[in-house]
Image (cartoon, rainbow, N blue to C red):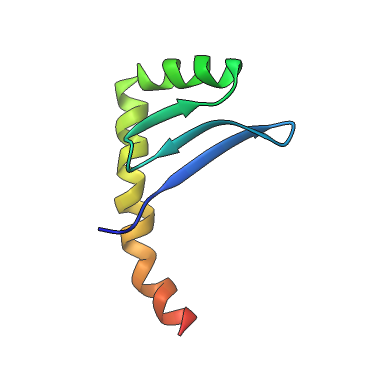
Length: 70
């Protein structure tokens, strides 16, 4: 419940676009990032694939990472 999947895209060391599983969509931080986010948010297959990454990556690996940290 407390796990969040975040994927950020950078250009010239500046965060351009970010997907956050808690928001459920892409957010742009620059002019180009806003355009990218709008395009990606309008693609239902890509958006649903990104939403699934929380379960695919985070939830399936959290126990392994936790055990290794201990």
